[in-house]
Length: 320
Image (cartoon, rainbow, N blue to C red; front, side, top):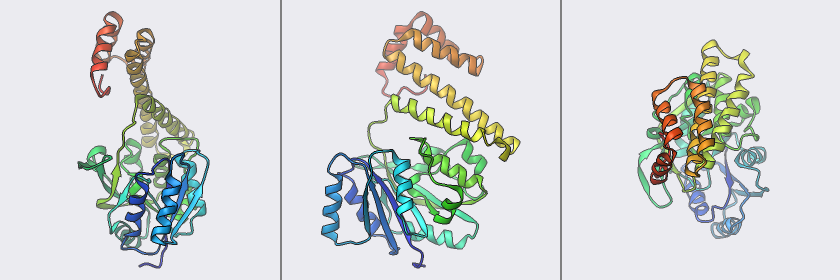
């Protein structure tokens, strides 16, 4: 089973505290026919840590490349271009693999002829410890087979669990570099939209690390990228069924609503109540009458300071 080579593509950006552990988890795999393609854009000591790791282990499976920071999509695409494997495995530089992660995904790949991509569940950890939840818990389920419609509704695939045939990428294309977020989601949609079956190993095979720094400003940008992704899909409407087109339209509407909510919350915290009011008016026009948002709109109109006080006290701004 080890005759097929697996290329790990790892984009790096300022991960000096995590990259050695990540590399160790790859080199400890029960599946041995691998290479590690690192595309580094770091400004910290990540390069030195990698070089010291190579010297210490004497491992020749690591191939290091430096690229000016262009985002993860560009880094992964460069890594795919430089890879020599039959399969591509994606792994973020602060994530880890379980020892049999590749062996189990390869086994499923080889047993299912129509599968173009395989993924799994993942453990969730923060900077220091394992959390009592999994990725599937966060995304409310996982699916396998021909999942295009389900995937339109929700991205349930963790990038660091994905193993994909390189021949599939040669057919459907690689990551969309115009998307600085959701580029992975866009690729999964394209693979499943081409009719490939998606395989699932229904157990955690990766440790997915969540680090601090997810701010509302990032949420705004991420929502903009999701709107852009589905607007691009809408341009290909002739390739989709009536149900799929409706799901795409619903997503565009949903993400526009999310955008106005996130932006309004940020403006309220900053004391920009009139601008926040404009966002809620746009939301009201988009969604029609909704009692929850109507109440918020009334409070924002007459008692804006109250909302500002509440949001500043809350650690999470979602749900208002």
